[in-house]
Image (spheres, rainbow, N blue to C red):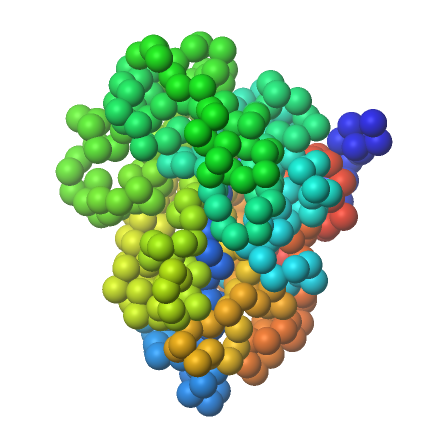
Length: 402
């Protein structure tokens, strides 16, 4: 197939790999998928001088890098701006639905029906001989009835990710007392929520050795591991996302090359980034009271933890959603889907912290300079990890690397 031949191409990342500023590729990557689409205007690209119906209810605060401000709901993150880079000019022209955004951000390309392209982590697994692990559950129903770009696709079943879900009572001695390994091949069915019910249940207390990457050392659930101080677990947060971020650190420390943490499973009837303002979705108040603190604690603790252990330089941490939110606040007091412009962030793995790449216009409606598309993000991740992935039509952002 053409796509298999394309996989052998060097791709757009190769020129970056030889640059002096990127001599040591990242060993691992932790991808934080912020399911629901964070509002850039209420998080990392605020417009405090815009009219009230655009700027929103929150105020910006200074960070530890002069000239960079972020939302007040991230006070801990503001103390680590020197560690991460903000990319404020993301955009795509596909349909403004969650599923297509997930496909683009996790594979670099849109699926054709159920025929999708491989997840970034699965490509890394193939190229490095490691394993792609997904926590704490796969992305479920987000309304589009399409795939989410979370399989190995045409790479083959041997490169499918291992989904470790905390929603089980099965004890797994090798990994964690509340995580079960599940094969994701059926996730290409019409709806993920329906296909989850078809997944084979793990009936043994031992993970097959073949399911683990070379050199893998067992890790345990952060909630039950005696090796993690209680204060550290509390700093990450006693919730699925916080515990999964801590587990992600343990996994990369043990040799796993790529870990994806899905912050939420669905956008329906639970508090997420999907801030339309009315049920079954979330409100802007939920950002202040729930989503913001959850992310702030887990993300900041992850950066602190990796840095303290001397792992940040070798671990790329990417925080990204599938799109941004509309500049104009809607009648329900929330914001709607907006793929025309949004913000993501990268840290570690050779990324130069304390910088902003690209910018949006006065209302956050579209990129003003240095526009970045999802394939560019995928190419940048491949470049940071020193691999030549499939040609997704993007180019690595060389300016991000120190």
